[in-house]
Amino acid sequence: MDIRRIDENLEFRKVQTSGKASYIFCLPKNWVESNGIKKGDVISVKYVGDDLVISKVHKGKKAREKPVPKIVVDNFPSGMLPAIVQGAYIDGFDNIEMLTEKGEMDPSIKRLVMDTLQDLIGFEVVSDSKNSIIIQNISEPSEFNLKKVVDQLFRLAYEMIVILLESLTSKNPNVVENIETKKRMVNRLNLLSQRLVNQGISNKAIALKIELESNIHAIHWGNVIRLLNCNTATMFKMAKLVETINSLKIPDDLLDMYKKLPADREIPRFQESVPSHKRSLDFDLLVYQEIQQFLEIIEEVRKKAAEKALEPKLRLHLEKFNNMLQNLYENSLEYIKEMICLEHLNPLKK
Image (tube, rainbow, N blue to C red; front, side):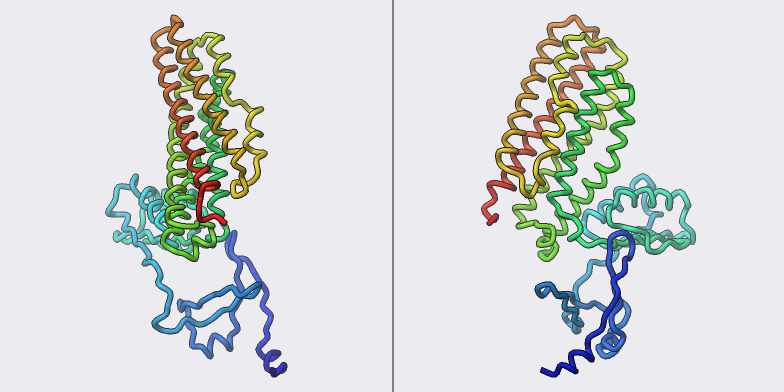
């Protein structure tokens, strides 16, 4: 082995940051020129132990990239644009271009795009001209662990249940405001979790990075995300209902029964658990049993309310609230069942 040859090829490069979460360094000019690499060409990056091997991708082996979706904003009502952009994000596109054929994009459309962008974790505007906006993914899938993202989504959902019940029992008038503070983060995590699952299904390399073990595994994660999404959507509706109920007189013995449901003091029982990727079966079974107890309490509340001579308006709103609350807990039971399948009954786990 010629030591001098190794020394001649050895160069040092300073690692820098780009955006909020990406790390970059410059490729050696001699290597780039000798391999005929130009702007826009694709190179391969391979892990070999702790080392990173960078190679030229030869013709015929160039990595296939998804086409950049070009969304002509003139063709859609402005109210549809956020859903269209979010759909492209969930589908796994890393570049999205929005343009107008009218010469100059309406400033209100640009503001709408910028507002939608706040919900797309990992994306930033890379080009903003008179007639188009290009947004691009600047993150790596390995920066996000699917299990941790979904676990955080569950914790936020649980915290919102606590906010609703505390607002009901303490007559807190700020329930809508308190729920709204959670809403954007819930939406962001929901979109991100759906994107990660879809990327993992279509790309084995990404599946490995985010610990998505199989397509069957992905179906379970999809069910978990759907259940949590249904719960949070229900809670946004319940917040306004609680405001209305609080303007009416609820009998004290009914309020006392609602106080048996989760309160602040019970949140640590969930938050002090180990990370979701190390969660124990005992923990999941404990949560399952507690949720079953909450459903029994709701049934007791129903019976108590039926015995009371409540004014019609209050009875109607309480019945609707109880139905929604029951739905929340039934979905939560399904969530725990899915987590047990994922974490403890998965035959692919070592």
